[in-house]
Length: 67
Image 1 (cartoon, one colour):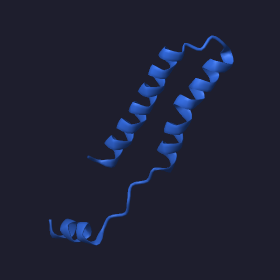
Image 2 (cartoon, one colour):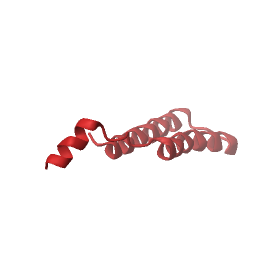
Image 3 (cartoon, rainbow, N blue to C red):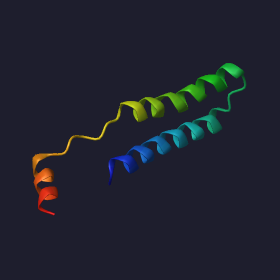
């Protein structure tokens, strides 16, 4: 699986899991909703900014050059 697809799948699963948590907990206050919105949004945003594609290995470079 390509890194971009994996990243999108992990972020989507995280947001879906927090959505289920919101449904189960049903917060009644603005603070509760704010907290759960932050928990849902901040980890995917951090992952999107910090998760980099690994450098190409030597064998991948050789295979690409041979094509």
